[in-house]
Image 1 (tube, one colour):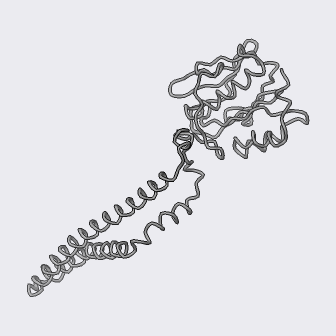
Image 2 (cartoon, helix red, strand yellow; image 1 turned 180 degrees about the vertical axis):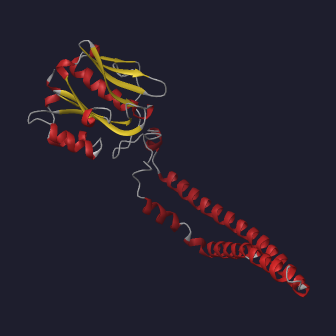
Image 3 (cartoon, helix red, strand yellow; image 1 turned 180 degrees about the horizontal axis):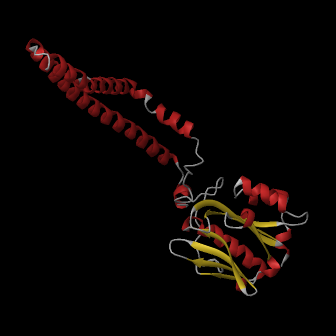
Length: 282
């Protein structure tokens, strides 16, 4: 092994551990020896029996530490001196990460395509230290052919592109407050939307009540003097519901289109102020 693995600062160690579940972080800290160095940590999204689960594997300068419910006590350790080769075996819709030792193969983790590039990074890191012949993978992990996915720097989740915002890490309250700011110039229209929707909802809830009166107090009681009154009220409720429901739909669509127009206008103005270098980088 070369000296690259020894040049790890405490900050680097903490950064590597932050990529996996805090529960697994605590287990690794308990298991680490005083002079042992963490080289790479990777989280996985499947258990060995194919169920979705939060599992992980950690590569140190002395061993592989893997976490899975199928392992005894949920953890398995393999000394690097016993490892002949790391293997990523493609399965149907997922992958199996295992090691070859003298005369046997040990299944360590299972993962989906979502975390494939994370395990490729682990294999590449291992290959840098021990040689490419120590890694067997059909995904290009040995020689870097596999294109690395863009991931969130905070939680490690995959992103659609490198400049995308992670939906899991974004502050939902700030997003809601920002969206609400677009409604302020159109508050009168928003008020009418709510008012018409409430009237239409109330009108749609009244027919069952008058239908009960029609059956119990008119038909069964034989009081035909109330027949035209109840029928007229029912017809009026249906008309009110239809009219105000149509008004609510019209105003909601108008309201939404105005907000979309304001947002697009703001984006266009912002793009007009960007430098040419910004577009060249794209």
